[in-house]
Image (cartoon, rainbow, N blue to C red; front, side, top):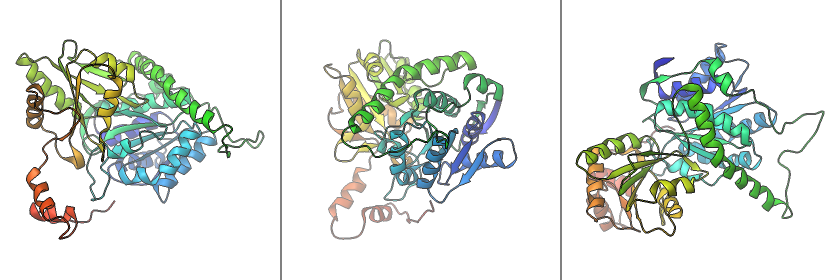
Length: 417
């Protein structure tokens, strides 16, 4: 049914349609509205049977999800930013145990300095934790991906992280199509756990494993992620057939058939990128865009096929590896190994900075004119004067963040988590 909803509410209703037995919640912006709405559904009896567990930390939230899933019920939680970091130990436990937990990550910057706005630093920091990572471009896709995520998680017995841009999506109101319960039930079968704690048939979940089998356990984690490269597009295709719209998959191309330049990105920024691509196409410029929908497992073959004919690749990403370079860019280069196309890493939107059409137009013009340097990390809209002033006084006074806020005439403030 079509309805105007906040992104968080739409995701909460999609999760509820998946019939979780346990929801574990600890509030942290910008995911709080998701678990708030789910708590209302449980409280009013709209979602039953389900136990809503309010915990004392994000580590506890993931720990409860692990226990619930190991006991044989469908589990869900959500987090963001520092919260994701706080549950890291449990994240590795969930993936190492092969538990099909689904979690929303409302992407938000990681401090210090404190920042509550959107970028992809949080999810990217956990890209190798063994969780499947799916990235939503819109609220409709965020809703759809949660339904697909449970199918995928339970088919492979792996945890899945659905990433949606904090505030940009979570707090935006859009018209979305929320499927009915019967539709979701037809698509998502009842949870049939592969491993379950049963007093009548005792097993150890989370046993100590020494050198004699640890490598093999890790290999199986990797092998199941590789199987996801086949399962993700198949499940997305089945979803499209059942619900009449396309969401998810490994990658999505936009006007790339004859493109000499292709812009690569993840998440909600694709809409703005594609608007600017259209403007350049109207001028006769052969340019297109590639959305990476699944970052883990990394769809190397799909990326190679989509980009192999291009002369230049501009990767616009909302996170980077400090001291190394672009994260998505490094993965794109991996896919294009042995090919001659140039890849340019551009960091944009950190800490919620707007990625505007004007800035993207200028960036694309720079790329087309050959003024970007391969192997160098570019920062979109970097205030070089502000950086230069801080470098000039480095070592003489105070923390960088406070100094630069004063230069900008802004008073810094502590913001609650």
